[in-house]
Image 1 (cartoon, rainbow, N blue to C red):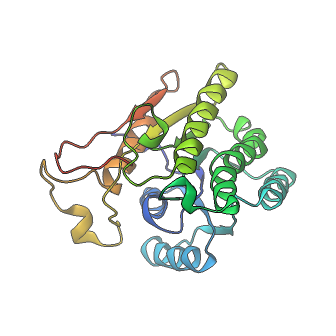
Image 2 (cartoon, rainbow, N blue to C red):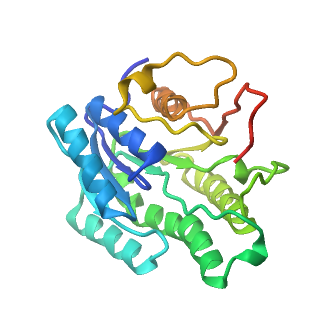
Length: 250
């Protein structure tokens, strides 16, 4: 596989832990100029230092809560005013909410939907002029199988599932609106995944059999595969499915 991120400016939301953090490490290893964003500054700073020790260069850190609309819009305006280079936007940040609907207060429900749908949409809208200025712009929307029809809840709340369907609709409409502009839109629909980190080399490089859940490494590899396609090729959506029978959908 060719290296589709070397020298590219990449912005990743939800990068303080889990899949977003794994993407940040792998993309940095491959020579991307990464900016990481998330709600918890301490997680971002710790990850940035780990990446600096690996590569010699720390990613820029942007503490930001996607549920805070003012914060999102002001950040995007700042980057536009500064004419920051941006080639790849990875919309990975999402607020998880589990349990039955009547167990949540109105604020929790509103924050989940605002962060996952409104915050993601406004951030993308705000950064789109920078992407359009890139020679090879890509938007990767990490959605989840919870954004697909007829998938079991398996612990996800009604609000979370509704937000993921909102993200799916956003992705589809954006893809149609931007067709012909050169900005590629790809939706990735992973199920529940095994959270491993490239910072843990033995775990990351372990050979896994049919009974393994899909891992962060599998998802990152899928993203790199989609980015490596020629520019005239785009994947509308990629749904990942585990082969194990001991599996619960996200």
